[in-house]
Image (cartoon, rainbow, N blue to C red; front, side, top):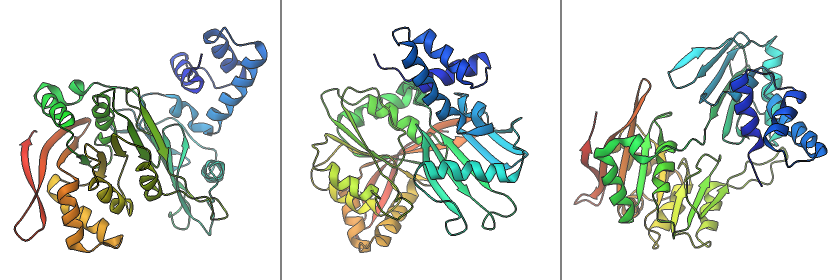
Length: 355
């Protein structure tokens, strides 16, 4: 039997307000995994303790399953978002050196450097946890660390969008329309995409490409590919663009790009113009109408001609689902369709707006 021991331990520590000590973690694993031998319990507890304690003073915040963002502004200011906006936590570091050491240790564990020669990193540091850190003098005064925690809590499509929008989205999925989910940071793009993928027919094969594992849909046939940064020697990197090319050889019924940020847009557009319909992707954007210009900028930066970008976009992406965040409320604000003007450039036609 396989269980998520780290998740189990985090939940129990948070519920009982216990410290992440080896004895406490051993007791939790023993209570919930009676089939393990004493030696196996200790071995599992040692691994789980290391996974939790490596976050240092932030461990209680990481263990809190409500937390989505942890922001270290200084040794005396650690902010957390548990779903109601940012609030100052009670966590304190002993010194600026401790803050910097934490960031450097987590970066080193992923094979990356964080020093004067490489003053910032953006790396996955745990299951569904991504860290961005930047050190002085680039960060003025003190090391800045931002953690994004993606919780694999499944919410139904109806819960997320309501009864008005749910049938429309399900019809788009069944019609194999290629869907681009857009919005700002924290708008709920990953949560909505997870729910949409859970509605895909169980006979279809979903192939997900991400730089950090965030998508865990309830579906019987999901294949995950994850990009990898280069190591300290500058070798071993695997880009999103590399993975898009590999994915096309793996017979995907549904190709999913966790987030389009750069040159992978070229291969995504090419893939969707070669018979891979019904794909999904997400991208940061302020509005649905901004998408043609946003994709044009990415495509031109990757070496495509402007006309070529719009030509491929016109037949690659069909539907845009735009999300907004208003305080603690996240919602679908617009569903739109990509169309082509007489001069061959793409524009967006709104199918529906919601407030």
